[in-house]
Length: 95
Image (cartoon, rainbow, N blue to C red; front, side, top):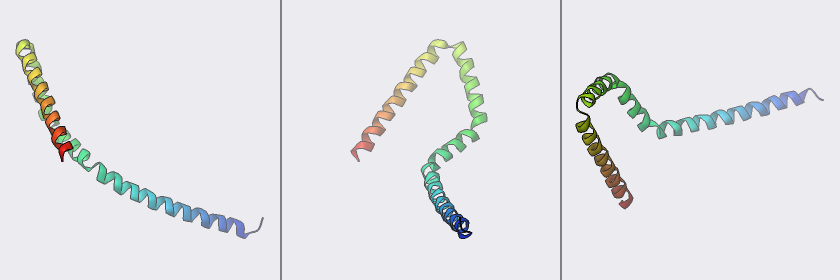
C-alpha cells in the first residue's frame, strides 16, 4: 500500500462529510419550516398551562356537583367540535 492511498482516502471521506453536512443543513431548514405551526401551538399551550390547571379544577368541581349538566354540555361541545371539523374539511376541499 502506497503512502498516498491514506491521504486520498482521507480527502474522499472529508468531501463525503461535507456533502452530508450540507444535506443535513437543508433537511434542518425544511424541518423547521414544516414544524413552525406546531412549535407555536406548543408554546401557547405551555404559556397557558397555569390557566388550564385552574380551569380543569373548576370543571372537575362543577362536574361533581352537577353531573347531568356536565354530561349535557360535554355532548354539545363535542357535537359542535365535530360540526366545525366537518365544515372546515368541506370548505378546504372545495378550494
